[in-house]
Image (cartoon, rainbow over all chains, first blue to last red; front, side):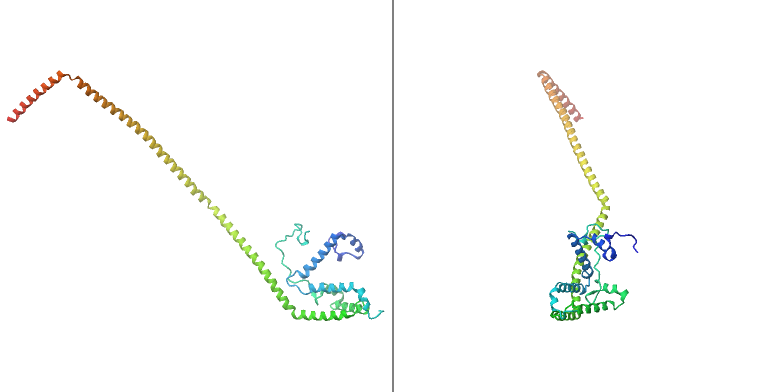
Length: 89
Length: 230
């Protein structure tokens, strides 16, 4: 399928096979600089795809807000747990 | 730190002219779900796949009380209803307004670009004109050469005149000198001869010459008398 063999470190996450996942994680750059680079690249991808266009839609901002709501629910779950209606599910 | 979008001369692509912004962003369905999710599930589950996934997930979260219904749920539901109503009703108007703002910004920048481009085109025109003018420089040099030649000629003639005048003056002087010399010699000689002659006339010779003159005059008178009577 591929026209040449790509070294493992340069493959993207979607192209990595399950068995190679751990070794692929080993090649990733987890230094603070590397993390910042990763964050910036992710931000650029999202920004250029949904916000930096001539006719943007509300989805660009709405997805971020929904993500914020979801994360704040997850972080507050230990506190919300006490409002459960039933003890056994 | 260098921005990732502005790496210095590392890619063969050049950054100018900057490619235009894409017209529309990535597609999003129902405002929060990107289209990629639907495309991912389409081959295996068809069109209703993602919706079934959503329903199943929601029921699971509710039944296991991973999502808990409390006062916040009601608040979230009301806020969500208001937001959705607002977006559906006024979304297009707000979009048009923002598009207009954007248009104005773009138009202003476009103006600047047009201005600079026209000024540059004008500069090119001027350059071409100057190049054309350069071709006529041989005429300029001919005129200058003529000027210089004329100046040289004038100067030469002036000097010639001057030389002639000076030489003529000197020669005139010499001529006058010679004339003067000769005249003075003549006068001197004449006066000297006169003086000598006068000196040489002794008294005796003076009396004899006077008597001779009187005798001659008497003879002449007799001759004329005789002629008149005859």
